[in-house]
Length: 466
Image 1: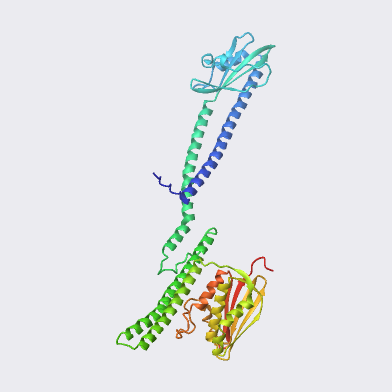
Image 2: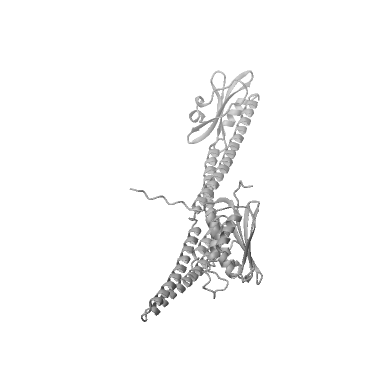
């Protein structure tokens, strides 16, 4: 049983989550440092006050009336105020000389840290008793040559309460900061991804009757401008391809309709009455000619389809260009002689191409030149081998092509003079362009009206060829 694949998480949710986590981490670190510094500072101040109190007690030991004065001070705390310091003085034999009332029950002597023999102030010990927090210190002092133990307890309940409230406040600030960070992340993410939504809406509007839609990258974030530009370029290519496909479909229907109509018309006329064998023969010969024309159109279209799909295989090899061109010229010598057109070839060099496809391309160009070169004209084929490429140029002295028609001369079914429908189907130069594209080369045409036309075919040479 196959499990349903998990849906990928959206970019928006990932951005919101990562932004919120980052903000929470920063807030947590900042507030934790603030909490630690504040609490530590408060306790250090308390320790300083506690040390000052011990030094004051030691100083009091050296006064003449210190026991009596200390006892009176400890027995009369301020009314209604809890004692901030709890003090117990023990003599060398263990008798309590003076202590804060009630200290023996709340803070017995055994809970104080071990006494030290020197005069240094020991580190306070924290102790909880009666729901209150105390810091305990035990040290010694000298009075009249006798050593006394000084036990001092500082009530830090207020500090503990402040610490709890301060921690709760920081926790509330942290929670509020995380919520605010999430809201800010959601807002920023929605605004940041809004161009993608606009792009989606624009692309969804694209259709066969609405190919002029563009994303328009102007004003977009810099990171998304290449994406918007790529979409616009893709839409330009799609619109151009769709227009060419529509034009090609119309031209194809027109080209196929003519021979089919000729076949059907001749057959219908022939069947209206009985004919002689010669008349039937003429109809059949005419039908064969039209079928051959249809067959040629279909074969050329199949070749173009294979090249467009990159399924046509090329078997490129190095061969001498001039003998190959002269072999092609020999096939058209009879036609050239009948039209009183002279064909010559100049130049030489090695060409790297598929010999069969090379011959077909040059034949199509030469045939096209013969069709439009008047009697007494000349067709010149030149071969030039330069660094990295071999160039075949076919120049005629025909009627030439108007400048506005040159850009479409390699389009399928395009003819300079559409009224001359008997002279080809408009696929010859389209086949040439496809063959050159298969070789990774280029095809170009230059023409002057009433002066002639030059078709240039460029075949790239192999990288290791000098």
